[in-house]
Length: 268
Ligand code: HEC
Ligand code: HEC
Image 1 (tube, helix red, strand yellow):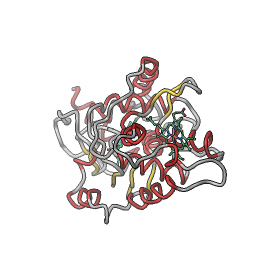
Image 2: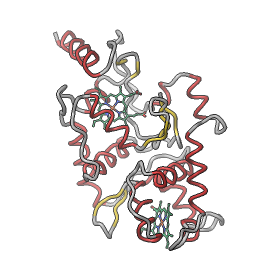
Image 3: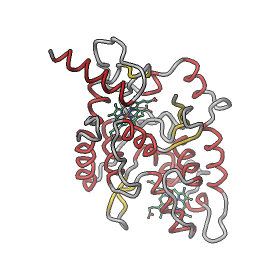
């Protein structure tokens, strides 16, 4: 009975949210450390691994240039965060920054994502107007920073002030939403490893963001990916400036603790 219901739900879901139907894969993925990369075709995997083929590298290179660029007012990122000497603690912290965010910002008294951290430095130290995670400079700099962390394990912040935020993120992850009345956990824990409309349902690990998505023909942030999931279940995406994004991202990073960062990744 349960199985019939489940099959019906998944088919309804596939028919409404996406085209096609779920193929008959009986057991969800038992391996809870499975990246979206592992589900990709060998061709796409090769594209991601080859820096000369990976389209995300265009943003990484742009981010690298912005990093050393001296703005009209204020200092360059590089001048405050020197990457040149192996003894420089700042260099080490920049290398791992993508693995440790969201992290708590004392000034704001709330956690900030890596993109927000970049934007705060732009505003505080370069007098630049604010940009969201998909703003051109923030996206490129985030891609470059993520690339510095390639191969390093996700190491969520251990700051005690993060706990309430991570818990809030987990509540959101488990809350039903939208006309399809599904939570993130239904697809990404229960049905992960099955196929929806021909595409494998991944476990939703944030190891490769920002990512170059072929469907977008562009690099996009993690919130952009999550908005696509929310509209997929016919839910109103959370407002762009809502603190719920950082809560959700904090939980996803905690859930993926120890998994290796892919650097600027590619997704179908
Ligand atoms: C109806 C099922 C469904 C629901 C509900 C859903 N997603 Fe997804 N999600 C998917 C599918 C399918 C993909 C892969 C799409 C693709 O590759 O085209 C995906 C991709 C992702 C990815 C990218 C993983 C990677 O390896 O790049 C993340 C992260 C993610 N979802 C998080 C979430 C979160 C957080 C929620 C709840 C707010 C959510 N999803 C709700 C189906 C769902
Ligand atoms: C005037 C010096 C200064 C400049 C310029 C500057 N930052 Fe920062 N940055 C800081 C300070 C100070 C912090 C610590 C957090 C805070 O107080 O804002 C920080 C923190 C960071 C962190 C988090 C590091 C960690 O270990 O968690 C990142 C990432 C970062 N900055 C990126 C950038 C980028 C990208 C730029 C250029 C757009 C930039 N910064 C420009 C001073 C600077």
